[in-house]
Image (cartoon, rainbow, N blue to C red):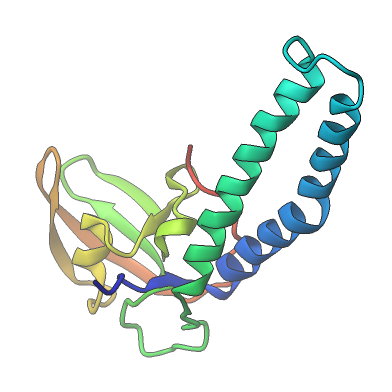
Length: 168
């Protein structure tokens, strides 16, 4: 079974790499040190530092495994120099929702970069799939959970993307 590639912007790839490096080189060794110290204090069954440290170590190891797997299948896509006005991965798109007369700015990013509060939507979300390969002025129908929505593309740009962490 081949896994689907993990598309990332350059900023998202750098952020995930930085997080992995931080966990491996700083946070994990510090936690191991605390657990060792706590274990040397005797009875481990009621030793809060030991119990919490072991739990934290499991969380760190789980995150390291996750990040390693995601970065192993990562494909960095840098469309920052695109100027043709077509919408692809990495595009910043101003959209107008016809039904609600609301305008929003969305940035099409990788699954691991999604942050809806900042308008960073996954490339495989219903809205992004409807926008890809379209251009400014086009109207598209989005198959949203609430039903079909009509969206007009107001502007398309390829701006630098700041990775701000994921939802959740």
